[in-house]
Image 1 (cartoon, one colour):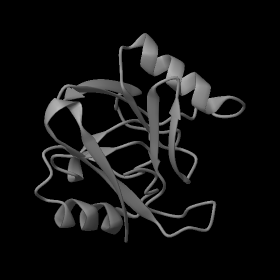
Image 2 (cartoon, one colour; image 1 turned 60 degrees about the horizontal axis):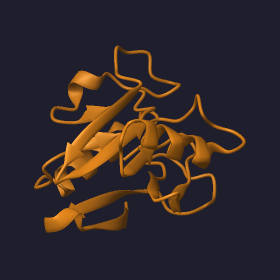
Image 3 (tube, one colour; image 1 turned 180 degrees about the horizontal axis):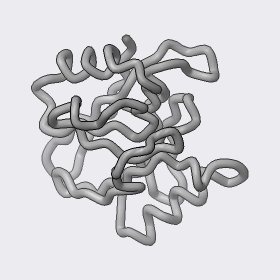
Length: 147
């Protein structure tokens, strides 16, 4: 999930609905006190003023994920820059926010996923988030969900 901009009820809704998830990540602009979201790993966005990591590399089920808000990379060639950051960090998948638009792309073998916003999507689509189900042998499935 990403870009809730203080709409904590939406974050809590997702956390409750997906309470069987092994990991939950918020990709920035939570705009609320991070300690109230027990069990949620939060990446710092451009509207977050707390001591949060700017990025995170983590491995789950043999897949390496690069998590970032992406406001410092936004603009021209955003996706290429994110793919390059993932490669530099040995990652398979980039999870990013900031654009308030869902995205699912591949660039140079790197999958780029943006769940869109839990507050408002700039492309007019419904607000939502993504679930990544990881299976054996690095197989996985991405599911887009709406509030």
